[in-house]
Image (cartoon, rainbow over all chains, first blue to last red; front, side):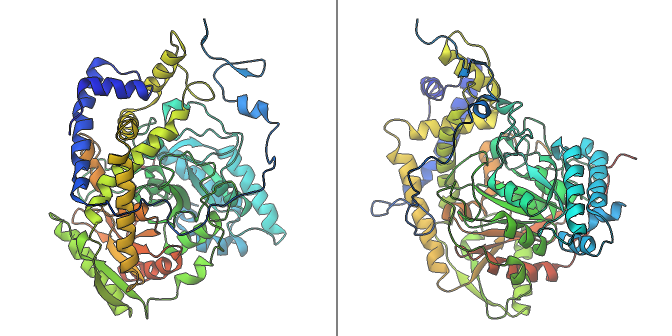
Length: 95
Length: 495
């Protein structure tokens, strides 16, 4: 199991992380090393095992479908790098 | 007044009640200690002295009226992963530059309601990803402990390295911390402090910067088992804002502390005797067994056959969940933004500039294992391995009440010593990570000094929601080990 340079670039694109060619070289090694190491899990037969979903048997909690929060637009925008008239501003998306 | 900083929380509560000193004096003593020490130790990334003094005065007013909560006037440090209203919270990442929450995490809100005083925000590995506090954007924390006859700078463990160092150096009476794979217990062990990660669901995760949601838990680091019990009792609560928080009563942990171990059976898992284990770690573990036997516990060998698969499966689950959780840092709603020719380039440049190397590595691993065609082979497989790990513990707990292991494979290491190879760094969590994978409570208690003169800890693992037994057993180990010498102060500037 090994990760090649093209895969590093594809994954970085999916993760929205700009990487340089130099970084890609290092990551190729590091990611391959980590994935080779986790490959030892192949030794275990898990075909008849259910995946763990929670620590203690417990039914999912539900609450009433009602408004519990809101009307705090100023709080939500307070930390934004760029805002205008109550909106988040991003680079142009539609030409 | 420096001796005030040496008190345990239990003793300080008594002193405040008896008016031997005021909450203001107690807080001032800690603020002076921080002022003198932080340049050398870098435990605090943000000091909040004005807020601390204001909170302390309010505590004095309440104490004067005979009121006050269980932590009234007790000065604490808060790991920078906890959102604190109006106080910068960054998870020690550049990408959260200047982020100032407009809300308070449930755990810290519980502490303030109980009367605690906030001294500031504590350093940690960036997004809690690390075992040495070397990945923080604000630079490494230095362990107050040094090897005998050496002034080499040692790491305080991670990710809660600011918490462990600050508690050990008397820069707060206790600290909040979080633990995803060992981030409370490993730093506690190598700084000679007590740390407990409660059962998953015991503390609300609401308002804590998310790393791996199915593993993250908050807990305290303190200087005694009793202090850890006092803090956890307040931090733990049911919270409707976290669907994984459990709706069961928080027991009186403090009452459990002195109950002893007579009648308890303690399990010793043979799989934790890993190849190449340092002889002094094995010796310490044997000593722990003897102490518990002498105190009246029965000892029983148990087997946890899937132990060796915990770490590799953790390094699938944790990065997968992290890559998903960290997708929110996009330069739009908070924190850093870097320019880009279009919106995607803006995202990519922001994230490239904002995340450090270890965080990027984990995001990429997580993205890879969750990418099309790999989900079953990695994430699903790892979740199945978790079931097996949990089953091992379930079977062991049919015969024993708690399990005793070493906390770490060795004592504190030097800065830079293990940062070259990611897998070598990951191996620090070999004894702690199983506990997160199974969701169980785990505690580290100081048990002695290494041949290098630095602290070592023993770990106790409990049944789900049975933190009380850990406090009982932990107190017995603490008492048998005797008081740990205080690290010698090399870090304070002359006032």
